Length: 290
Image (cartoon, rainbow, N blue to C red; front, side, top):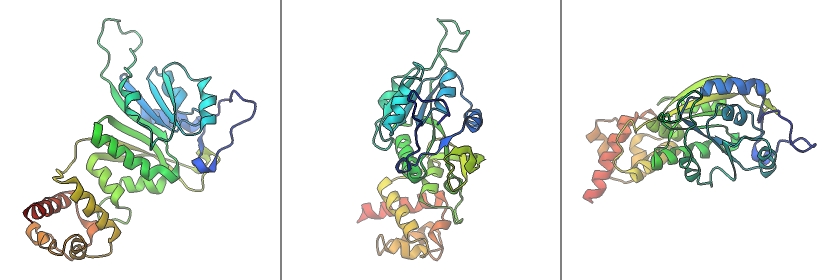
């Protein structure tokens, strides 16, 4: 992702199949400032590319695990990265990153005595996500959070439209399944907008830097399977009424709306997380009673 020279005389050509758009050094500096590395940080970088974020993050002394699918870029980076960078060749959606991360310890800051306690370890994800894979990567991040509770936050570059979905609210056009899952598990903020000229080659759309700060679920979900089924139906039938959405799950299910005090003529995308949690609770109870 940087414009550092490759070890080969032939420059790397961005590959369309990998959705490659390399961040310029000028904008990389602004992104690193937005990330704001701190003592104790351990970074997972998705798609280091040519190293625009990798090198400045590594220069702070923080351990960096960089996962890159393009083996030519891995080969180029391998001769240039410092020892605190671990390069992993693979698809981020198929790579078990947890063993790489949990084996790393934060770096002792300069001037700290050898016998002093190390700063508390904090795992953070950064990256310039390929636009064609940003949604599955975000869902993968939610999965890692649910399974391991590992990441403190994620600072990621996305297509602006996707970033706006992360910060969407119920009842808006941008509100969807991804927005809902992320809102359940994190707080989302758009930190900065980036023009196409921030990248080479420039994409045809505007981009944004978003921060996701993870936390315990904002609403208690008593049955994950019922929740997943409800959310899938809500957004595949979003122009239907809630009564019709619930009938598609179980013919008797609309009765739970009356018990929850929710108008069955509402559109599903208007539901708050609290209301969804209540519906899931009642649906799960009804299933146990059958």
